[in-house]
Image 1: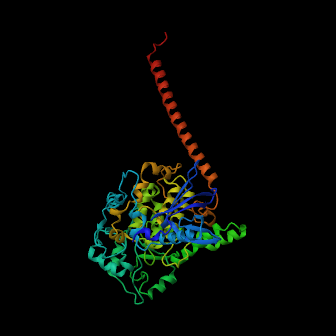
Image 2: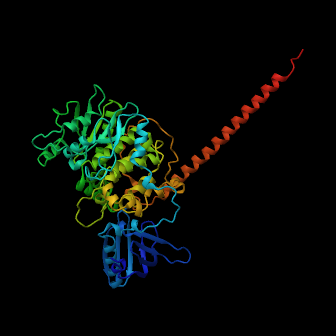
Length: 555
C-alpha cells in the first residue's frame, strides 16, 4: 500500500490552528505518510507543529458554511483545533487523518521509517540484556542460573528467550511447570534482595481448576526459593472471590495443603476496562472547565483513579515489607501475570533497591519487568482517553505504574536521579513514538518484527548526554536506604504534569523549577569556593606552624 493513496489533499493553506496557551496562528497544513505538519509561515516567527498520526486518538468534524473544523484529540491528552477553508478540503483531510492514524499493519508505522539525525553512541537494544542482569546477580549469590529453555518461545510465548530460575531446577521440570501455569508463565526471578538474600518471583495463576489439580515440579520450584525454616508469601493481585471464580474456567490459586510453607494474601487490583474507564472519566473531569469545586472533586472521586493508585502502592509496599522486614520470599501473580503483577514487582523494587531510582537502573527495570516480562504494550496502549471505538484490551496499566512512581518521587524528591519529565517522556513514547522500544506485545513479537534490526531503540536517544541533562533531578542525593511511601489518601495527589498540562499554563511552575536549578547551581559554586578557601586556610596555618618551629628560642 502506498501512503499517497490515503492522502487525498496533501496540503491546505490559510488554516487556523488553535492550541492551549498559544495565540491562534494562520498557516499551511501538510499531510505526509506519518506526520501532520503545520507551519505558520509568519515572517517574524515561523512556528511548526509536527504531530505523529499514531499519536491521534480520535478526530471530530464540524462544518459552518464552507469552513470545516477538525478537532484532533491525542493520546498524550492534548487537544488541537484546525479551521480549514473549503468543505471538500476539510473532508479529505479529515478522512486522510483517520485512515493514517489507524493503519492495520504495524510495519507501516513511523518507527520502521525513522532514521535518526543524531549520532548513535549506544545501541539501546543491547543495553539491558538478561545476561548483564545475571552478571550482577552472580556477584552476590550462586543459587540461580540462566535458563535457555524458552529459546524458541515454545515453552512460554510471552517470556523472553532467557530467564533466571533456581539452579536446582532443570529445564524438564520448567517445561512441566509451564503446563501448570496460565500461558506457560512459570515462576521466574524478579528481584534478589542483597540485604538478606530473599527473593521476589513472578508468574501467572496456577491451573488448578475445580478438581484441585497439583504439580509437584511447581511446588519444588517455588520452595527452592525459601530459606531454611522460613515461610514465604504468595501475593495474589485478585480478590479471593475472583480467584475462586477463576477455578471454574480452569485457573485458580495455590492450595494450602500443597504449599504448606506459603501464606497466600489476596490484594484486589483492578484490570482492563475498569482502568480504561477510570482514565476516560479522569481526563473528562480535567478537561471540563465549567464545574465548581464540589463538582470537580466529585468527578475526580468518581473516576477512582487515585483509588487504583492507592491499591497498587499498598500491594507493592506489602511485598517490600515481606522481603525487607520479615525476611520472607514472595511470589506475585494475578491471572495472566502481565499487568497488575508487573506493577507490584516493579514498584516493590523501587521501594527496596536504590539502583532502580537512578536513570539507567529505572530503564533496566522497565526493560526487565515490563518489556522482557511480556506486558502487552501494543494492546494496552492502542487507544488513550479519547477514542470512540469500542474498547478491547486497552488499559492504562503502564501509565498507572508511572503515576505511582511519580507519587513516590514527590514524597522523596532527593532520592531519584530522574525528574518527572523523564516519567512523562516514557508515558508519551509508550503510546506513540518514532522508536521501536514499545512496539509489539512481547519479545517473541519483537523478534518476528526484527525490531532491533529495523528500528531505533528509545534508550539510544535518551542516554545521549544532551538528552540526559533534561531528565536529571537537580535535588538528587544517592540514598542507599529502603524508602517507604505513604499511601494515606491525603498523601496521594493528581499528577498535574500529565493530566492538567494541556488545561492550564505551567509557566509559573517552569519558572520556579528554573529558579530552583539556578539556586542549586549557585550553591554548588559557593561550595567550591568554601572548599578552596578552607584549603588555603589549612596551607596558611601549616606555613605558620613551620615558621614557628624554625624560629630560634629567645634567651
